Amino acid sequence: MLIKIPKNWELPESKATPENVYLNRRTVLKGMAGAGLIASIGSNAAFREAFAAGAADPSASLYPVPRNDLYKVSRALTPEKIATTYNNFYEFGSHKEIYVAAQALEIRPWTVKIDGMVEKEMEIDIDDLLAKMPLEERIYRHRCVEGWSMVVPWSGFPMKELVKLAAPTSGAKYVVMQTFQDKSVAPGQRQFWYPWPYTDGLTIEEATNDLTFLVTGLYGKPLPKQNGSPLRLAAPWKYGFKQVKSIVRFSFTDKRPETFWETLISNEYGFWANINPEVPHPRWSQAEERDIGTGEKIPTLLYNGYGEYVSDMYKDMKGERLFM
Image 1 (cartoon, rainbow, N blue to C red):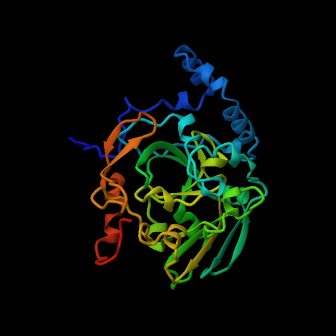
Image 2: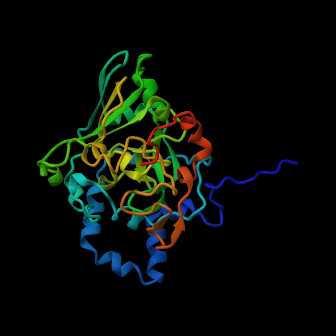
Image 3: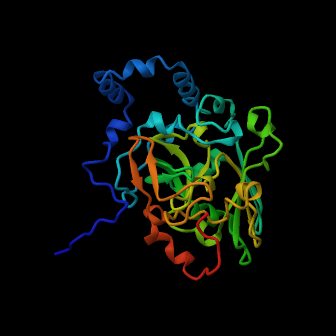
């Protein structure tokens, strides 16, 4: 008899929000009305305005996409409204309520540049890229270095598929990713003390790991602008600041990049940013986190609970500052 031992990121069916519920807004709203919550959402004009703007995304017909059930977690999904209105996106401000300001971002036309140590440099339209990629949904935990966390259903494709499309040369060791840069719509980019554009990177091994995911959708719909539309990174064993939003460029190189936060505050933020509850931030503990859906304080897991997928990549890196 086959005995299956569940992994610590797997979500019991009893705790999962049923797919037909979170994909069906009318069903969700009807249920919320019974709890007296519909009035609070209806009165939030900013929330309604933000999501009315997002409805015009030309990729909407692609969603929902099939769920990959290999990727589950041990906690219930964070409510959509919370995950889409409690966001870090420094291009639009240093506070958490940037979801309205982020609607100024124009996501079409959107071109992604692939350059550096590749067989052939290219620029590709985001919709042409989506047409080439195997879209799926994955439920991942997300852990912010600030100490909060959430559980969301990302839609997108494995980053290794983009690496395959790029065809890097044998000498390429890193993938550098950059966000858009447009001061006319992103007020944060007018703050000269930040090293814009937002830049981060992964090793080729990290970029081609099975977990590494390029996100194009959320909750069965196109990715909202405030969450990094139209293309962002999800590497769930790393702190959220590694997971660059609104990507316009992938550069392949043999030199390790100096990333946005590493450039800004190198004594607090390093290149690797792997989650470890035993390595504190210089100004606070990382031993526990607050679930933004429930407010519950829960213990943080090494590699955010994804060690089975990723720990082998770091086993021989003695002396590296891997966890911050």
